Image (cartoon, rainbow, N blue to C red; front, side, top):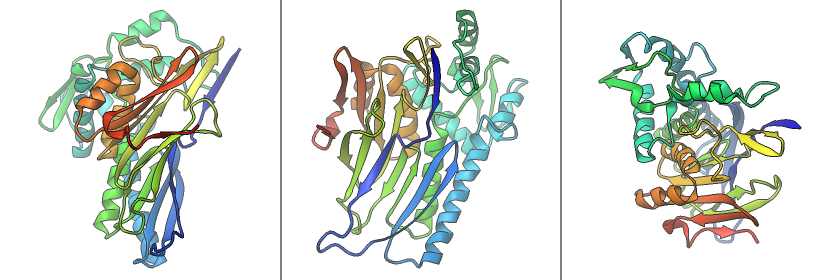
Length: 339
């Protein structure tokens, strides 16, 4: 029996407590749109803007996210990354500065994770057809053929240009672009004087706080197997969080879960983790590291997290008796599991 699931529900979310004694009045102004294949909510916690001013700023923040989407969306044939995938086959092609930043950042995470995060995984994604109406397992031969060109080291960069060492290489920025879009949107808010805000793009979260919400935010991680349940939480005033999970897009075949987070070394879905939540200063880093750690698994993934400055994480992984978790050193005192 085969079933396919494609969920755009939030993988994690914030809860903020209002009307506390001796706390200043908060007037949250927010808007939610469907962008980048998920729900995106931008909220300003406000006692200094009019509604009209706040809405105008939020509109500009959404425009920044739209620009990133047109830059890095592989499913848009006219996006800059789609055009680059064609041009870089023939030789060096000039690259938009923001697109180059994303590619260089991706290579940096690839090197940190020994290739667990690899933006040249696109040929494998094409083979798996997760977005097909009736997805099915690819053949071993097709997977092996795609694996031959999955290698981030085949991206050759010369200042503001790049080319592919193999004509079959394609890059996919799906594991990092959403985080970058969140960062760009928050930059717009800050540049326009916002001091307290939250952006949630389908589980990629960035927050800044003022005295209005200080100490009043909790990041809740959803239970990966019980849709209406929560697994745990930690407090966070400022920073970014991203989660990668095997329950976002997957298909069930003969009681086996085949999800969309592929291991660039094997060509198959990474099976050592169930859910990985990363906290970092910026959403771009958190987004990419969440995928890298998921592929590495709990042991190697947590070792990498604990070696990185200003990065924390929670890894949920399968064991014979159910789901277990491990928490990075800097989160041990803040993370609470729901009992």
